[in-house]
Image 1 (cartoon, rainbow, N blue to C red):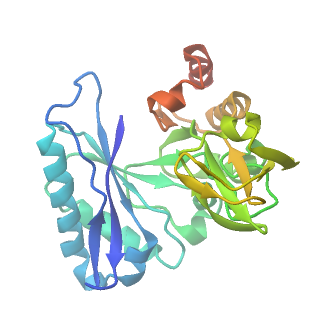
Image 2 (image 1 turned 135 degrees about the vertical axis):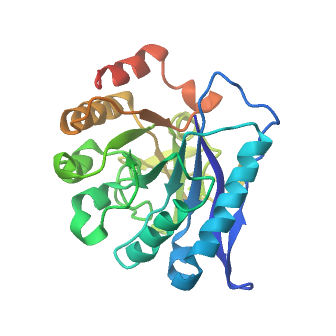
Length: 290
């Protein structure tokens, strides 16, 4: 079970990196799971912190991660850093990763990092992070702000343009596949935000929306839906991951990652999300890697 502990964001007032939205864990976690803590570092942090302070920043992040895990009785064997670095921020990010290895909490543990599709294809420009292994994130493949695409979460044809470079990627990789859905709000074809608490099926099958495109639905009247205020004429693009698309990606990545073993991660796991997929369907996805 991967546990997002907290985000690291940049505070413009204090001019320093700050923890954001730390997780609240019970005092004793379910011992049937092995837990991998994940810390997400926002781009803004990489653009601001001074390289002279890299050891201090790594120490503060490690101390908070260790405290949260110890409070819940978690003794991880792997720690994962999640960051969508760019070619301009890669050197700072990689130095931060190296600084983590000098922290006591990280010593003796596997250090992993998330890898986006474009970071695989453009590995020379983007660099390869100095970690033990990566987690290949096979989702969020399109620009969510673009009005005229059908599904930004998953698109096997688009993914294969990037994943063709997998056989030459120099890190061992685990694979993360999407189970989540969301709705994207547009007004006058301009992106306005993510509606996370509105199921895609409610938009597609409900009476409040009229279909206006291949995957676009217009609100028929002013309304409040699951806490969101919607205006007549605003459009919603419901996005999810179909079993067929997930299975196709699984087969493709299994064929192109030449390893004896790997972890397959489903993102994300909660009771509502998991109800959309049968155990048999998820087993079939895993079978692609066996």
